[in-house]
Image 1 (cartoon, rainbow, N blue to C red):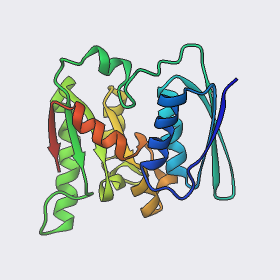
Image 2 (image 1 turned 180 degrees about the vertical axis):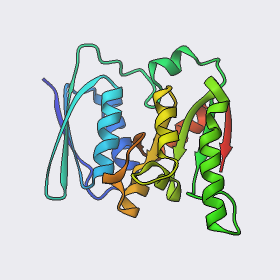
Image 3 (image 1 turned 135 degrees about the vertical axis):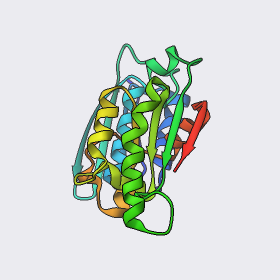
Length: 204
């Protein structure tokens, strides 16, 4: 059995995922252990490996997180890191990406901006099946945490099949990693790939 250990502690997003991707592409180990030093990196590496067909477990001791991945017999390592089977089946379909970089909409008054953002998120369902993915970065991640007025609307969209990606680095920065209530923790590789795959982008 080919085994590889990868130490990604101290590396900024998305380097742990990129390093993991490089190892998979060049060596395709049966067993891979990746060490990182924060919850967001652990979530990103775990999700990436799972999407590549690996069986993933994780553990942590202090500030060190260890992700252990065993390659399954059904591993599909040729699948794009960000693409689900549904994405592949609908390559020709309209895919609208909504990129949210703040918890308020517009400038001038934050109370008004908060109400506008709530109304915007609540109205996204009107895009129907064309709405493919929502990416939240910086202050936008605050919409996905406990206590957010927009949380229920986002959870309903996710239930309907909309992919929601929440920046892990941003959650860590605001101390909100444990408060996330919707979506998957993401990294800059996922975000860049999302822009590449989308047929239309809405930036708020």
